Length: 354
Image (cartoon, rainbow, N blue to C red; front, side):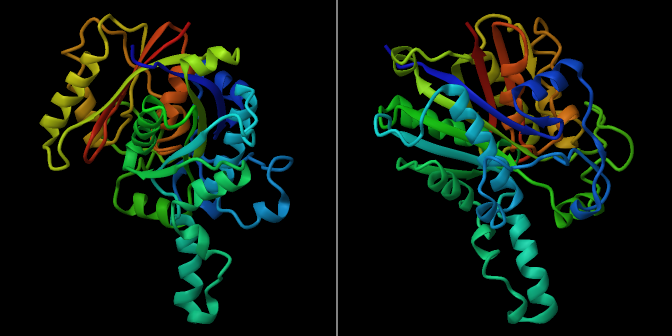
């Protein structure tokens, strides 16, 4: 019998607020967090975590040294450990960390390079440089929570968290670990929003519309999930949010859009033996993603209409982690997730709740 993977803890930092209750309220109401971005985060519209504060969780001296994605990840991880009832420093559990991100390290790179380009080497800050690589996020988490197990950081555009989830599953199914902290995190910064705006990849006016092909809506935040084997979770009496029935990642890196649509449809169908109670979709206005996911509609005629968390919390917001969070918040026993990606693998997952 194959070991089942379950989710036992959840932590959320979203543009609508921090914590499960704030996320549940925004998801249930369907009210968008999209608004004009603060001046320090760039131009145009987006979903920014303007009310976020790490006080009381991250020591002030350390917080000053972190970039936004790392702060988001730290707070979300803290919530996930508390929610799961796990002491991360306990020697009784073998714990690992898997991080998915799209923009991790980029904010610090911009902050490091602009003074360097303006004033030369003397303008470069050594305090910023460690954050200029995405793996710094998992390093900070490992240090903060005294995790001595393996860590991985996946940079996979829209599917970073789903790619990290696959690695976490491998560790657990092979028996290498008893629990994995899965984190999706991303942050907005001026260069990113300016590039999206100038290249016409982001929505320039109004709110995002599914299938509009008019552009994406940048967002930020972090989502943390505690993954365990069912045997371990039941042995310690943990509450179980859901059983993860499958994650697939198919499609060659060079596949055409029609081929990506086909493999996404096949992947979703292969892990959905019965009609799901709810469907969480990943596209929301980006031309390539809309077209990939739209191809599923005529194939999956009996499925419920998909819901799109990116229209509420923004596109990046953890590089796909918001899809998994929405699936946990969505009522229903069996919830399907489809996560089309503009490049490379296409992802599908199924959550079954008690």
